[in-house]
Image (cartoon, rainbow, N blue to C red; front, side, top):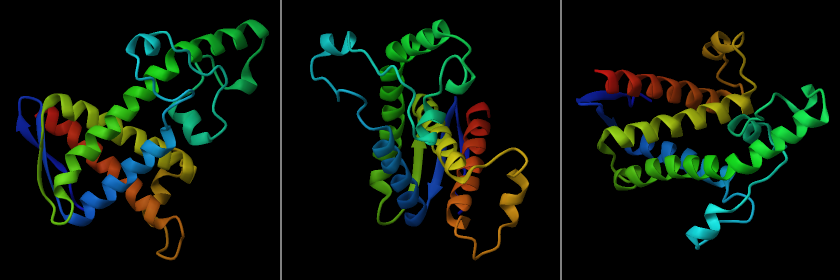
Length: 191
C-alpha cells in the first residue's frame, strides 16, 4: 500500500488511492465508528438537551476504548484515594461525550471523503480543516490497532520482521501504512 499524501499548498493535501486502499481505509473507519458508538444515552436530537447531557463516570473496560478515552488522573489501579477517583469520574462525565462526538466526526469526514473513490480509486484533495480531521481519525485508528496488537516502543522494530504466516501480519501492515500516511499528511500540511 503506497497511498501517501503530498502538499497541495496552504496547509491542504492530496492523496492518490487505488480502489483497494480506499476500501480498506473506509472499512477501518467504519469499524472505528462502530467501536466509538453513539455514547451512553445515544445521540439527542435536541441540541439543548445535548448541551446538558452527562457522560459516563466509569472508564471503559475495552483496552482500545480506554486508549481512546483515557482516565484523566492515571490508570484506575493507580489511584490513591477516593477524592482522586471522584475527580476522574467528574472529568469523564463532562468531557467524554464531546470527545466521542469529535472522534465520530473525524471518522465520518474520512468515510465521506472516501465514498466517491470506491470502485475505482482516484485523487482526493483535502482542505486544511479536512486535513486536521484526517489526522485525528488516522491517529485514532493507529491507537486502536496498536492497542489490539499490544505494540510497545520496544516491539516497534519487530513489526517490520513478522513472518508472513503470523496472523497479526494484516493488522500490522495496516498499522504501519496508517503511520506512514499520518506522517506524510503532517509533512504535506507543513509544506
